[in-house]
Image 1 (cartoon, rainbow, N blue to C red):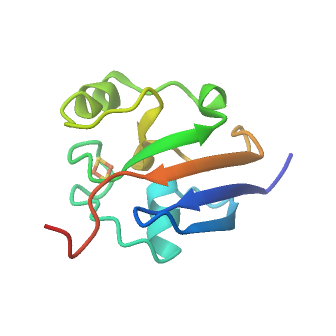
Image 2: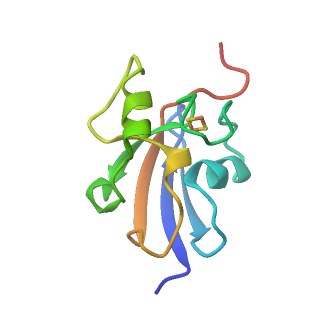
Image 3: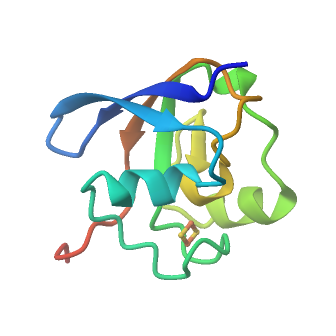
Amino acid sequence: MSETIRIKVIDKQNNIQVLEAPTNIGLSLMEFLKASGYPILATCGGMALCATCHVEILKNYEQLPEPTNDELNMLDTLPHLFPTSRLSCQIKLTSDLPDELEVKIQGEMEGEQ
Ligand code: FES
């Protein structure tokens, strides 16, 4: 089992970065993105209550664990929803994930109106 996952991140300015994330320390994708310098608001702290951690999954969406009803309900409140939208706080980085993901940040960042 792999202890890292490769994540290609595209930010809202379309800057691209490929990161290696650990899958053995219990981080969510939102926590990893914030720790990597993406200032996602994450107002609710990862409780699936704010949707500011919205990401669009561009690769391997179908290999992720299914979203919960709480996550789907919160995604439904977003004005811009994509077919592969997820809340990054609800994606736990574990060795069950595919080796590679590609995500586009779509949520709210600190300092944005
Ligand atoms: S951090 Fe609030 S919904 Fe993910």
